[in-house]
Length: 253
Image (cartoon, rainbow, N blue to C red; front, side, top):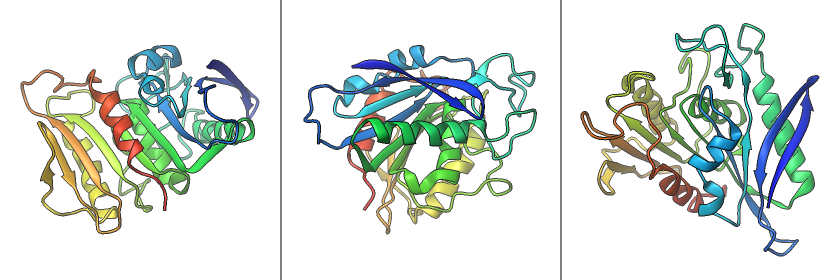
């Protein structure tokens, strides 16, 4: 079942595309996935490209719509395209509007549906991946796991810190020139530390490495090597399946 959730957050109209299954018993607890589009994206396009609702029909899947947002980097400093904040109290009038939007969406979904509070997840591509990491840093107590592609935590180690261990699936390309691979790897390395998953890692297939955690917060990475298809700043067609599969295997204790 598809619907549009309309909210007013701090006086600003916001909306999100929501998919929920009508085939489950009314009392059944639903996993909840928030999926965030890239800079310049839309909730409708992400619902097609990600398609988490098709891979996990038992889950409620929310595709929020971002507002025109200036980037802190060189991509869109004037804010002519839609996007998400990447740090707390972001300048240029952005503030905490997207963190507040997340809070409002979560409260509304919990009012309208029976949500499994041990199975709430965040995923996103590019700027949507940045915001997923920000949610981990600032709303980590609410999340069971994070799955992102071509994202990172802005200001890691300075303005933002990962402190709550949470399972992570990260997809990155070594030829990414939009969000440089070295910056993405720095966030992954920080996640390995906070998740107590600093071992050498175990191969889990082509491009895939699994880092077991001593506190049940593993990290799984798909690193696309130099020169290969999808090694740039792209969202691979196989990304939704591996992200949804990762989410299905992780819940809060």
